[in-house]
Length: 86
Image (cartoon, rainbow, N blue to C red; front, side):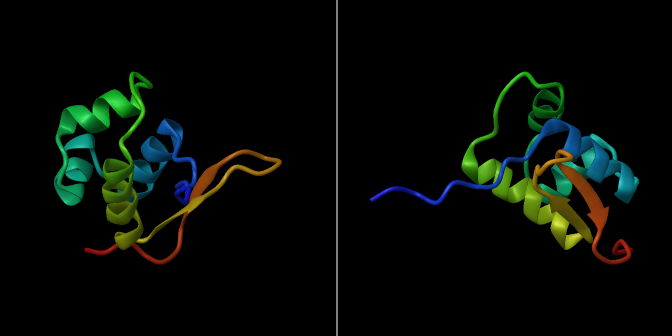
């Protein structure tokens, strides 16, 4: 039996989502419970994320109000689903 693949999460989406929230890499790492170097290396395109790490990062961003948009004809993106949490 196969596994359900996670939607693709791009380094550019991560950077853009942090920008919408006005978060630096340290803040995202803290909110997700991962190291800053994990965020830095992923955003720089130096490595792919483990499924569990991607889930943590995506959850932190979504919990803060970001909606990740999967790639379609116009590419991937981000938007605010609701105002950012204080």
